[in-house]
Length: 78
Image (cartoon, rainbow, N blue to C red):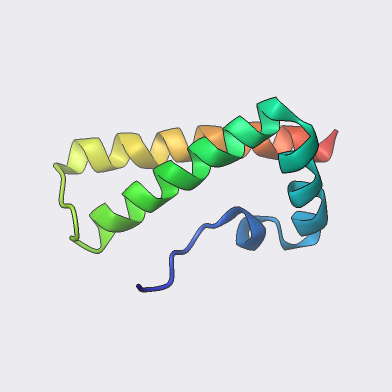
């Protein structure tokens, strides 16, 4: 399997320990992280043409990933 960019620990390398801790202790954060992870994998599969989709769908998926990343960042920054 190829390298998947945009994993949370790569997006927030200085927050890796906090991400791990919150995944275990905060159900809301764990759900957001899992949603992000699943969507990120889908985006990666579309970008590498493993599972091609229409351009508009790919754009919407990337927007949704950005929204999740922003929510995760807000939690990590508080």
